[in-house]
Amino acid sequence: MAEIPGHHGLVSAESPPSAACLARPAWSGLLVVAAVLVTVEMAVSARYGYHRDELYFLAASKHLAWGYVDQPPLTVALAGLAQRVFGDRLIGLRLLPALAVGVAVVLAGLIARELAGAAASRAAQILAAACVAGSGVTIAIGHLHSTTTFDLVFWTALLLTLVRLLRTGDARLWFVVGVLAGVGLLNKATVLQLATVCLVGLLTDRRGRTLLATPHFAAAMVIAGAIASPYLAWQAGHGWPQLEIFADLRRDDGGLGAGLAFIPLQALMTNPFLTPVWLLGLLWLLRSPEGRRWRPVAVGYLLLLAFYLVVGGKPYYAFGFYPVLFAAAAVRLATRGGVRGRPLRLRRALPAVGLVAVIPLPAAERTEAVVVTGNYGEAGALERFATVDTATRTFSGHNSLWFFDRPARDDTTAIAVGYSQS
Image (tube, rainbow, N blue to C red; front, side):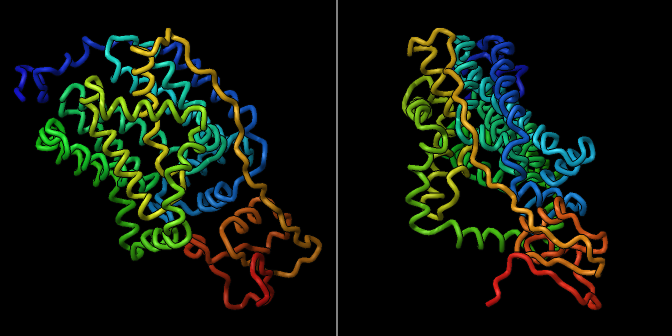
């Protein structure tokens, strides 16, 4: 590994030039694919009603903080912003998620551009974007205002930066990684999982170890920590409650059964018709000479699967890796598979989202009362929909709702929702 004069990074002798080998971004094609996805999402954005998590985020947005018992602040803050701009309109709340998956689709195409170089880059970019747009989870999370939706954007942006870093050896890209990781941590702590498995993947590779040995990498960790420090300080000041949430999720979603089901469920989650595509991309990264440069990314994906095989988890937890796998497959197909610029047909599917049941409360009585609910979904639904006297207030001890407010000692009438009589 030798340093090229005038270059701000270490590039091996076989490395391509930092920019000259890349074709131009296929902006028109990528934006068309993203626009189709966003249009479909917005066309059905008002259907199926609010998800319980969305109601919780809206309730939490009235109590903005740097952290919550179960999550960082960004998704909650964006829900509050959407409500301020669009009012109590479901279509307004779901605009940002639709735009977010559109951004992820474009980023997937740009990953393919990095992987393909000059060879059939336009075909690869559009094909990768179409695969991500046609995945079941993409369509599902684009319909909901959730932490997972914005997490997909951060994962895809981080993987795009890592792919470019491995291609160019430009250590200055670590600063971009630090910023993205820090902001991503303000949305969802799973960014730490991505960082960990990719770090191990880099350690297994000679060029990766060289990149990690630069002071830029240490600076990136400092940057990420500084950006995420308000959230980390909130967690520390409240006794790290999110660790208890993780333990609860481990008990609910973990175990041998969940772990064994995690890997086969990846096929259903990404779309069974597209499963052979991302598998081809994984093999291309692991085994082909052309994909060798980015093998640490594939190693990171396998490590994440192994982790969830052991601890269990919801099958969409690994979805952030699929844009890069689809991009790798698109490069393989576009350069050697006979694809001539024709992307996959977008598959239209809609998520099955649970309806929020609104519990009617008597509006005629003006007796001061409080409503205490068993979980955050019921509390959010009542706060958003219940037509009651203004003296009636909603409380819950579930997750961060416990910190927002509590009934006064002199409250004499309480309505319990979601509790059994036993």
